[in-house]
Image 1 (tube, helix red, strand yellow):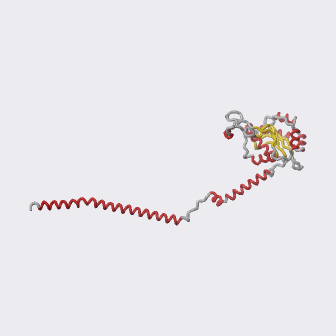
Image 2: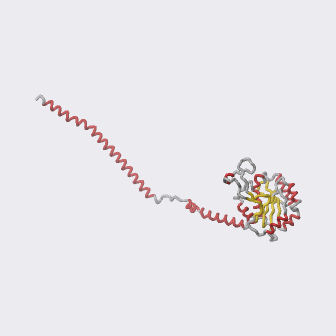
Length: 309
């Protein structure tokens, strides 16, 4: 009997321990359920938002502006048709120029008589070369009435010079005064007469000459030679009607790659390993037929010049 109370007390302790140990587990389970419900609710809400956005995008898909290509934009703005007409106009203008239909064309010498000139000879000169010009006028180049009579034979000779860098200064005024007296100048208004601009002078001369005179040939002459005028006239007369004719010297020299030396070529690297110029026109006298002079006139803006010209 004495051992019975002791046994009952032990049983009550054994039964209370599991109840005390299970309380944290219940709380953990409860919080786990709450967390699971929270996460599930967020996921469901995100899924619902995605579904809503997808429906809105699908509904407005047809209303979205179309991404236009460059061709579409040109068509919409009307630029494509305008571009086509500009290209056609440029081609027609080039063709018209090549055939001699030039805007603002000066009345050509010899046009009144219907006679086509044989040659237009341009003698390069400079501001400080008046003495040379006087020597030429007294030797192979006619002057005064003799120059007019030579033009009746179909030969025009003019000293070719540009304008001073300071337009209207004493250099320009002296040339204008000399020209009023001798009437044997072709003044290139758009060209600056300077040593560094000399390569461009040929383009200006041939362009101006082919617009002013209708001739078979156009001749460039430097002022450091005495020209056999009659021999030149005889040679050109035998070659009347030859298109695409170039008469003169050709050369191909070394490209100067060292800056500071005479005839230095800034674009020397374009000539490859050989470092030599392509064969090109060169010399104190050269002759071009009319169609070549017209080509220079039409394409003068794109033709490159260098100091070896």
